[in-house]
Image (cartoon, rainbow, N blue to C red; front, side, top):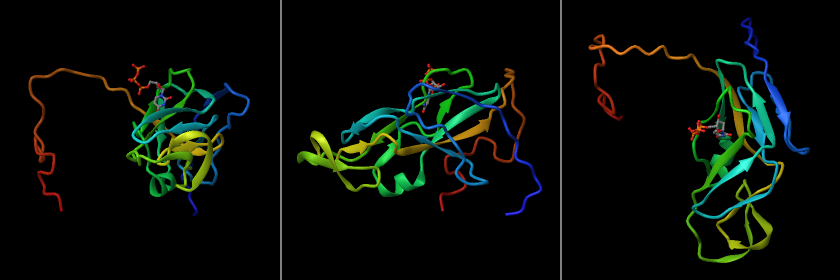
Amino acid sequence: MTNTFKRPVAPVKIKQLHADAVIPRYARAFDAGFDLVAVEDVIILPGETAKIPTGLAFALPDGYELQVRPRSGISAKSKLRISNAPGTVDAGYRGEVCVLIDNIRTPSGESGKTCMDVSDKPVEVDREVDRHAYLIRKGDRIAQGVLAIVPIADFEVVEELDETERGAGGFGSSGVQ
Ligand SMILES: O=c1ccn([C@H]2C[C@H](O)[C@@H](COP(=O)(O)OP(=O)(O)OP(=O)(O)O)O2)c(=O)[nH]1
């Protein structure tokens, strides 16, 4: 792709909170996101939500947010979903960035020392779990981060809003097909 438009670059400071935390990088030119990587093993039982640590803290410039978004490969292959997609990391947040993940499978009722990995492939675990559990392994690329500009709203309370073609129509007012 040739492009004369220069993509804006914003300075982002990163603090490694864990020796094994993976420093983000854009895998390819023109990628919108960089992978966020789990820094520890976590088992997510069916129907449960887990907070997966990345071992990283960020200082974003004012006027920016970091969105925590799903990776389409994981969503396509497994029943793992980001609970709050897109997650919002505020510019003022200095804590560890974590990824909230739901295992939307229902319990199978059968347990053993095998469950699934993020590709929905069987994986051995060290304790008995429902076979519909997922193991997130340290080093798994569990989400992607997208840096985004966020304008701040200058709120003004008024008696009347200006008229528009849409007016109050919404929620399928134009039909759903
Ligand atoms: O996927 C996410 C979402 C949020 N956060 C961190 C950064 C963010 O700045 C902070 C608060 O998130 P949010 O504003 O979404 O949560 P809240 O429930 O409104 O909490 P608070 O009352 O602390 O703002 O938690 C993450 O690490 N991952």
